Image 1 (cartoon, rainbow, N blue to C red):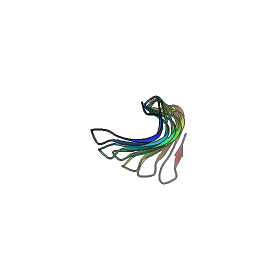
Image 2: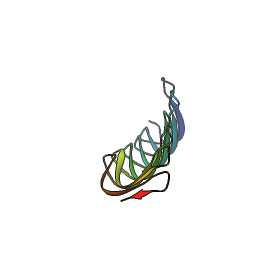
Image 3: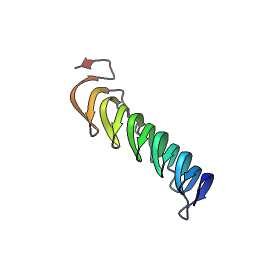
Image 4: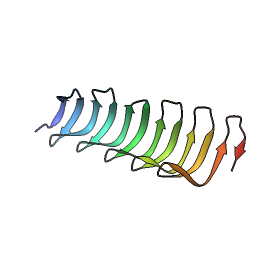
Length: 131
């Protein structure tokens, strides 16, 4: 059983470098998959947990993870130029946050399961604001 610092090469081409505990990724580490996705940050018993940065298929997330999902404060940037900054829970925007699209329009307010819900504000790329 792996324990301490080390490196693991999976038969499918995935590579992990970092800490192990009870044979699982644990502590600081870097996982790179065969399709080019990567995660650098903290692991807890095999799952992304704590502060980390994940890149996968044009999506970049920097922030907190819990049990492998976005959870806590973070910033999500998409390939099309849109981004979301704020609170996440269970892998989706939940709580206060702001989302901007590629053209510069910005939505700020409360998000539930990734959708703007309740009161909020919209600021257009031209600077017009609506509450």
